Amino acid sequence: MVGEIGIFDRVLRVLLVPVAVIAATVFAPNNPWWAAVALLFSALMIATALIGKCPLYMLLGIHTTRRHEPEVPRSLPRAA
Image 1 (cartoon, helix red, strand yellow):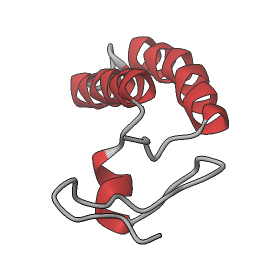
Image 2: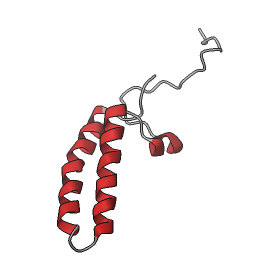
Image 3: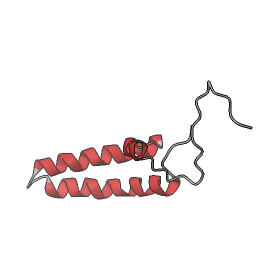
Image 4: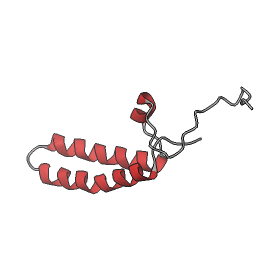
């Protein structure tokens, strides 16, 4: 099963995490809600980068991998 997230997208997500964590520490004294949102964003980005699948990409049908083959259910034979 091929994920929707390509290598470039994964690296970009991992690079955005430190930015979000720094933003969380900067805005935490002023507004704890922004800090919570930034930390939640960081956790989501790390999880999707590690798993290779993004729920939003699944809903929208976006694939950033080089080659994407549509998934065929295993019960149906593939066309020759």
